[in-house]
Image 1: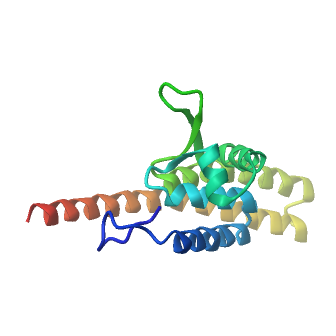
Image 2: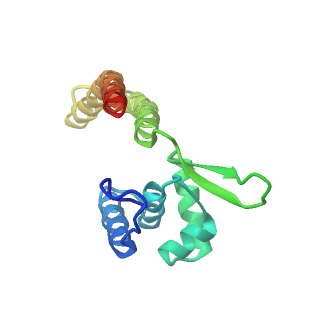
Amino acid sequence: MIEPEDAPGDARDEAAVSRFVERFAADLAEGGMQRMAARVFAALLVSDAGALTSAELAEQLRISPAAVSGAIRYLSQVDMVVREREPGSRRDRYRLYSVVWYETLTRRDQMMARWESTMRDGAKVLGPGTPAGLRITETADFFEFVQQELPRMLERWRAQQAAHRAAEARGARE
């Protein structure tokens, strides 16, 4: 869950955390993610460990194990969570990738490459000079543009994060 930075170790306002999870899940669902998957993802995101068992997710979100299972299946398929076994246990834990947004965008880049290829094939089928062919070509051009820009954007993100961590380390030493 989320702890206020100015009061590490203090008890959290679980009601406020729950409201945040539901609000962020609603934002994700509005953006196209399955509602239950969005709730499970948000719950994982706010957990300190970034990992929870099915039982913990069901209890926290007040949902059935079947709902957790379906949400995890979706999140696994879109490479947002990974299933891992608890050491010495038969229980699975579901963990976010350590850099979940970076991983998600990287995987989306691969998907956009496929979409671009399909759009280019579609433009040939429709005829490049037809209104539909032009629309499909523009879509393919957009996917190509995003693919060219995404690596540069992610590199800038990595550099920004490295600078941020270095500044925090300097501040901690002072």
